[in-house]
Length: 91
Image 1: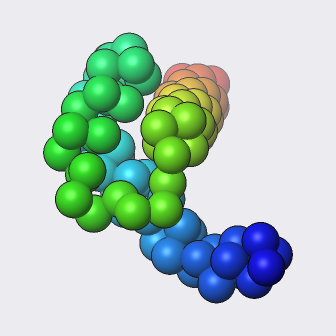
Image 2: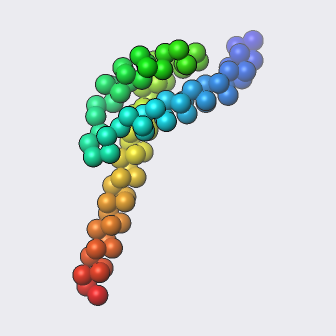
Image 3: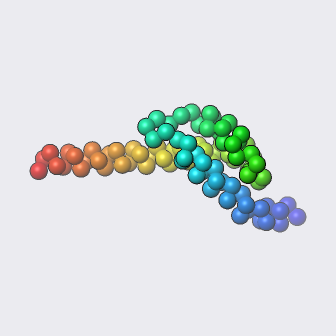
C-alpha cells in the first residue's frame, strides 16, 4: 500500500520540486547568493498553500541543489568569458 501511495504522489512531488526550483531562481540575486536557509524559510512561507507533498527537508534540499547548480553555471560562464577575453588579447 505504501508503494502505491508513493507511486501515485510521485508526479505531484516532482511538480512541487519544479515550483520550488523556479521560485528559488526567481528570488536569487544574480551577483551574490543569499544563505539557503533564508531562502528555505521564505519558500516554505510563500509556497505553503501549493506544497502538499514536499516535506521541509525536501524543500531545503531542492533549494540547496538549485543554488549550487546556479553557482556552478555562473562560475562556468565567468571562466568562459575570461578565456575568450584572454584569447582576444593574444590575437
